[in-house]
Image 1 (tube, rainbow, N blue to C red):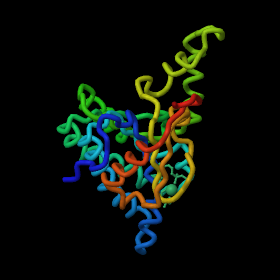
Image 2: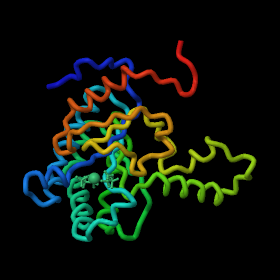
Image 3: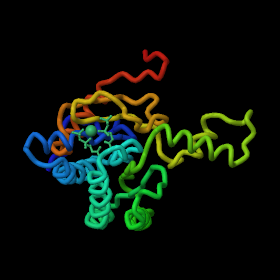
Image 4: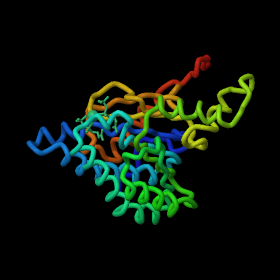
Length: 240
Ligand code: IPE
Ligand code: IPE
Ligand code: MG
């Protein structure tokens, strides 16, 4: 087993976020339907989650379905809904055994089939008391939608305008406990955020890799953490 050689485990990022991209291209390169790429992405996901837990990472968030992904053909959307459901059914118990706490962030939406919502609730409930890695799935997630929903929550709570500050807004994000993202990894050679965790990524280090998501493994996560650890984070100040 790969123990993350090269990583300084005393300086791990608290929160790593991953845009799992390139499934369709992975499949197309093999003459397969795009959906086969999503299926192949499951092994990448499980290996990455296990690798994160193995090195003692506290928070890992993955982008599974964006608020813009409804623009895809209905057949692919339907596949992704069913795939995420079956993944939860097949994998949540083994993640539970590894002390992983599963959470979801995203906008509730009537287009998400009821049975998918039920599996999400079950997985979250099953693992709620776990104390290891917090593994968050961004599902029907959009960074702008999250900020808009938080603003609406603030207004609804009746906070006076002169008491609105960053801390007040954070309380209304989908998961108020989610720490800011230290490291964002995007696969497949695309160098963009695609509306992922906009609030939480204000000062993230970004690592882009050409590897397509189905080929991604824990070693790639560890390599990205090594790159992160060589970066100089200044947060607008000066490091001397
Ligand atoms: C990422 O792979 C998975 C989702 C967006 C759900 P894509 O399906 O975007 O694959 P490419 O980018 O078309 O290759
Ligand atoms: C981002 O990937 C969303 C997910 C990985 C779920 P996309 O493939 O949807 O992003 P764009 O369209 O290339 O920006
Ligand atoms: Mg894509």
